[in-house]
Length: 363
Image (cartoon, rainbow, N blue to C red; front, side, top):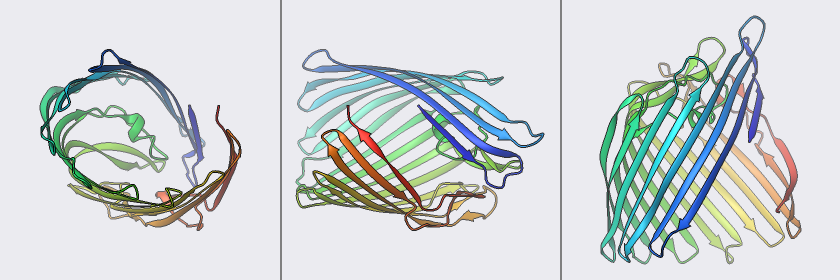
């Protein structure tokens, strides 16, 4: 459960945005034999969103209920062959005149090795959605593995991805949700590389290319400076490099991350940074734990049709934790360490340097 309440700075229409989220999920895993393992997951959630109005403007309120169920498992034929699959279904209950939405997806994949160093994956994906024709598409993948330092994999598939408002909207601030958006037909190509040197160095890199006929893009509602969404045909290329270095028997950890995103579309893709860079230094002692992290947030467009941008900023965080008893911890945390003046949303400045503290008890 989570509640988020934020004042809306210098807004003539709304004074405050409030979000409530309550979610439950239950998963049962059963090993039915030495070769077969299955699982069942059921869950539900409720999401509430409110914009409290000023004066004669009407307040905006919406409620979304979401029920999900999934069943899956894998069967190991031999040391070099396994079959895995799952079936997932979901149902959205909307408040008001928006009709309820439902989606279904299932896949069956066979993973097998043709040599100790080469593995292939072949499968079939089936998607059904209320707002689109059913989709059936093959899944193809190859993995190069078993080498001393590296693992490399390629994957291609196509999915009918449902619109998930609870993910798309809740990750952003100051919104006016449009719920009845169609699913996206997404062609997805993925390449991954992993390099490990002993237990001291780990480097992971990846490139994901997606062509989506209904990419969800933010735009600003004229009255109220709040965000809603529309769909656009777009191709995205997202790449990242993660590196981690462990010193002194993993007591000290250094990590670096770089992301680069490229978009091909008829308009600007908003509130998605083209570049991000992050670093962290962590100390993991028996009594004390320490973390100093920094993030360079890249520029983002704020208008699909204009050239308005939010500038990047360097955001630092410092955290310190001490174990007081066996299962009792005290911590302090400083956010926006350098007191940077930055925005994540146009027109709404983020807080300056912030001090947090508390206790953590393990039961």
